[in-house]
Length: 433
Picture 1 (spheres, rainbow, N blue to C red):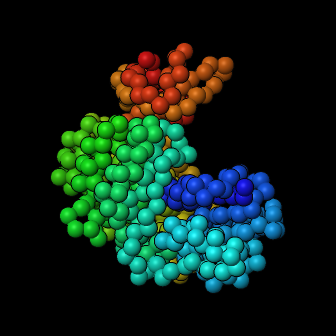
Picture 2: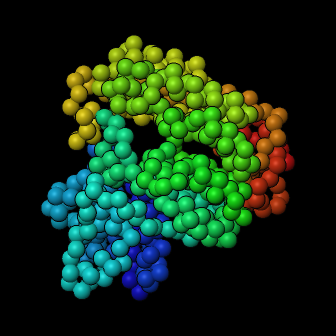
Picture 3: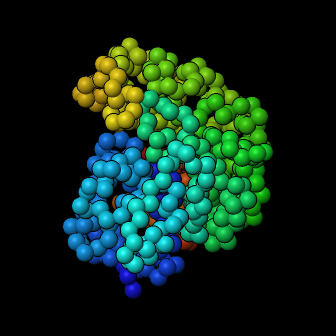
């Protein structure tokens, strides 16, 4: 039996695709082994969101060839689309598989074994086909991420993704629901709908949009929780918020992309909203839901960001009081407009600004959790954890607060009702059954 090892780089969408490829290999008779072990085939699902991601992708490909020089090393995914010519010259890489060709993994490997080398990279910017990948199980045992959309039409000035992923392509709702029914039968109670630009779901389909898809998933027996990946603020209309609030399975946790709280910076980023519009979105969701968890991403040190512009973002984040903020220092990405912009911010300044936002994030997160004290919540138990000799069972509330309970029974993959008592450690609270 041939052995295959896979390594994933990138977001939940990449992870979903890697799991789909792993299942294809298993069905074709391959034994899946850890990437650190000797294998016959190594597959790296690459990322290209930053120059650092490119470097990590190259490092993993070279590590694979070093582990077994006789192995077939396959580069797949976004870095392949962005740097096909470069990878063709890399002696550590034997085969290239771009986006929208992962579905053909087994036939491509079989052709290679027969002496036919096909570097499977298409012109991703001119395809309208949604790549039909699916999974029957995931790396997580209680929560399943399901990819429903690919591509992006936004062209933010710092982002290479539209060039690596192509234009918006949506998966038919019937196919999404069929996969989720399979996952529900396998015992998954929570699903997360993900995509490269989830808010664009349905733009290329007639009569379908994200809200109608969520309603269809809501009707699936066995699914008790529905979450969403990252959203653009402008998708949240009164109709959208009220529609979600009317579905009992929908979890009130919204990850709304921000990137900056300064309008001047947002314009340079080519983001299509203002800070005021973002704040109005937060207010709308807080009217529709009782204490929803609002989280976001922020980039510090974007080209041209002055001290005054950063202070504007800092003040904005203090005012809107989000649950969590993921902070990224701007990283130049070759091939984007931002990479050649004037007034690149020095690295020490980025680090200083990042630290200020991290401190605010910890404070906001703690305050949001403490605000839930005494509240009865539902927790989907995911794992066990031991602290100071005490065994806890840990999971997430509907708001995605990480919570621990004490019980002699094994509660894994059960949804339990408990009352939040106190903070146990950073970003983890103790709840009493």
